[in-house]
Length: 176
Image 1 (cartoon, rainbow, N blue to C red):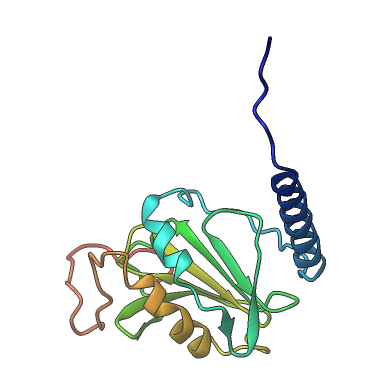
Image 2: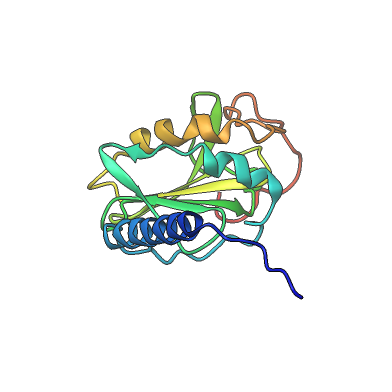
């Protein structure tokens, strides 16, 4: 004679009800989402030091909602995206490009075109890149909004003024 454990019909009912509620909740949640933004990951996006800064990024930036992105180490705000952040980009070498310090984070302005400004942290590895549509969000607002999240990445160098820069004898590189 074989014995089967008794199953309470109420347990089955509870399980089916809980599963149905979870499926319905997931469906409703997905239907209210904005479209996922496809963002290419930075080369070092899987660096563990990118994880915490990305988790600490604000839910809103200049009244723009944070969006879901397709790649690790990335986030964005706005529809269409007016600010995009990528962690794990190559850190910039010493440069004469403009550098600004925002809340203790040094940012090099790598590109300033009419439709896109590009900033990259200086003296932090992995480096963080911020792309801004300046007609929609000021660079200062974007950098002030994300700088506290980036502060967990160790600073190993800082921007200096021309007067404080180390003088090197020899030829001046082309383009400076």
